[in-house]
Amino acid sequence: MTMLDVEAEVVEPTQSKRRRRWLIGLGAVAAVLILGVMSFAIFEPIQVLPRIRLSPGFSLTDQVGATVTSEDLRGSVVVYTFTYGNCEEPCAAPEATMAAIAERIDEVDLGDTEVRFVTMSFDPERDDPMALAARATRFGADGEKWIYATAAPDQVRNIVGSGFKTWYEERDDGSFSFDPALILVDGWGIIRGEYRYQTLAADSDRVLRHIGILGEELRNSHGANSLAYEAAHFFLCYP
Amino acid sequence: MRRKGLISIILGVVILALAGWFVVLPQLRPHAFHGVIMQSPTAAPEIDLQATTGELIGLNSFAGKLVVVYFGYTHCPDVCPTTLSTLNKALDQMGDGSNDVQVVMVTVDPERDSVELLDEYLGFFNETFIGLTGPTADIRRVATTYGIFFDAAEGDAESGYTVDHTATLAVIDQEGHLRLVFPPELTADEIAADLAYLR
Amino acid sequence: MTPSSRLRSTALLMSAVFALTACGGPTTLTISDEWSRAVPRVAEASAIYFEITNGLDSAVTVIGGSSEACASIELHETSIDDNRVMAMRPLADGLLVGPGESAEFEPLGTHLMCIEPTVFEGSFAVTVDFDGAADIEIVVPIEDR
View 1: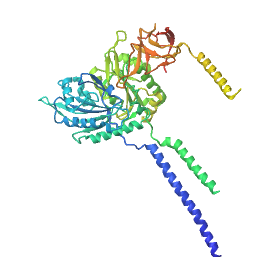
View 2: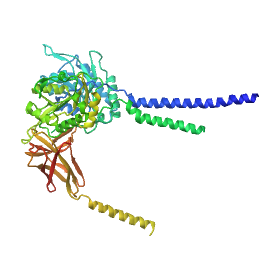
View 3: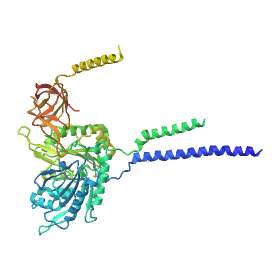
View 4: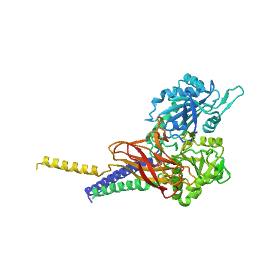
């Protein structure tokens, strides 16, 4: 046996080993890539807001006396707050947040989808269109994008209490004790965000971020999920 | 030789990937709902109304079944008959599985839709469909919590009045949670697929 | 024959063929695929669906209809209002179908509403009324599609 023979024996396996390593490496990379793509396709990990409950169906009268129904708002992202007449605490905080959101709404990309703002009074006895208009002016609601409205007296409890699960009760002096809230509803009429001021006051940053997530969902939606935002909403069964 | 080996390895990987994509993936992927699924289902709003079967009915009357709730009325020419017919076809497709599904229609026109009328109207589409009615205030309360708006619209003298109403369907699961919302334009196939999955 | 003249004659031939097919197409106003959804005998209303193809040179307007089998017939149309909500309403001014256009009357869309139907199986005759063309009589089968 000569030195040369030994060297030859050593060199040969090293080369094939290198190749094998290279192949194994390539295979591993390919496997990771394929698994990654597959798992993404399976689980579609996109940040979403939970679908919490159905937003109630309603017919309201706004600050100019016009009728606005839940069907008119379908297809738009809607932010709701609740109030009454000359309520200071605790109504003013959600309405101030709403004003901030309305002012900054252009920061969010929602494509063609509109964002509407509705502040609902649960005191229809006193809040006629004039009273609503006065409060609307105070918070800068334009009456187009942001309306102030109330429902028929026998409907308010159904809508605000049962539908939006926002508790309120009239006190002996005619004022209300009430659980201030800001509620985010998608184009399907499904509640996607509830911000209860008793726990954590909504700030406009957080709500805007959540509206942005709805925008992302809109861009990624297909099939039935995108229907709500397309021009062809077919939800009202008119005869 | 080696190049051939490499090519066959690459080919193998490609074939495996394709097989994975088109065969394994659809198996692994969770059911893609046609309706809108509620990820955090909460207890469905209570329904306590007079049923065409004679008794007062609450949601617990249907415990263990999937309940499809529709709001409509018998004077409705287009959307309501279309929806009821589609639901009947969906149940047909489900075969025995349809025994676990209960379709109910809450009338949005209690003035004209008596229990007898509802019973006969719904029975035409499917014997198992149940109609629900009650005082307008009760119906209004139930409809509101299901996101349903309805309002009697002025009609001319001939057709009498008509009722505008939201035509979405709600699906309540066996435990009484609101799980799915269907838009009215879904096909029988799509409804059957979603219901079969939830069953 | 030069290549360009061959091209020209081919073009001539093609246009002649197109002219022929155009001649062969409908030059009239036609209603096809008519049907009515089966409804129970207690029903106070049903709907009539079909497709209108306007092969005429001018626009026509569907203004309504009549039938022995219905107390009256109303034209109802689906429209998208300013709020982008689709709504169906009686169509007072009728439905315009332009020349060469067609209009689909289909479930969850535009339809003729048959008020107080009296025929619940088989088929029934309906006269569809037009403005700008003669009325058309169709026989509508009752089906469960």
